[in-house]
Length: 157
Image (tube, helix red, strand yellow):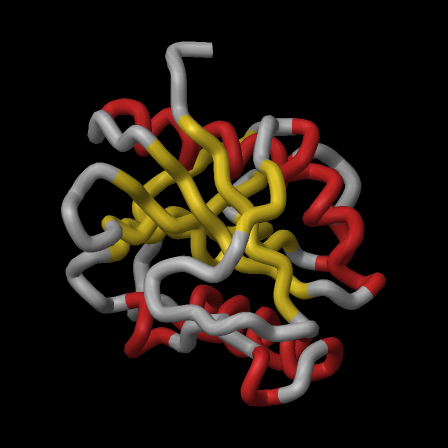
C-alpha cells in the first residue's frame, strides 16, 4: 500500500466531501450537542494543523493536531478513515504521525475527545493501545455521557 500523509488541502472538493462524511457519521452516532467534529471552517483555525492520508492518490483519511492554550499540550482532532479502509492500520499511521508532530513541538501532553457509543469502541481501543487513558473534561469541554476524554503524557517512547 502506497500511503502518503501530507498537509491537507482544505479547499479540495474531495477533502470537503471527506469532512462532510465524517460530520455525518458523528451525527449518526452522537446527539448534535455531543458532536465535536469540525467542519471546514473550524479546521481553518490557525491553532490547527490538518493532515490528509492518500493511498495511490485517493483520499482515505485525515487527522489534526490543535495547539492548546499555553503551548505545552495538544488535542487530537478530526481523526477519520473512510469506511472501506477501516481496520487496515491507517488510523494507527495517522495517530503515529500526529504523536510525532506533537513531540517535535515539545508538547508534554496530548488529549482527545471521542464518543462513548459502541461505534467508537475501535477508536478507543486504538488510543488505549498507544498509551491514552481516560481522563476528565479538558479545554472547555464539559462532562457528557456521550463523550470519552483521554490523555497521554508524551515521552520519548
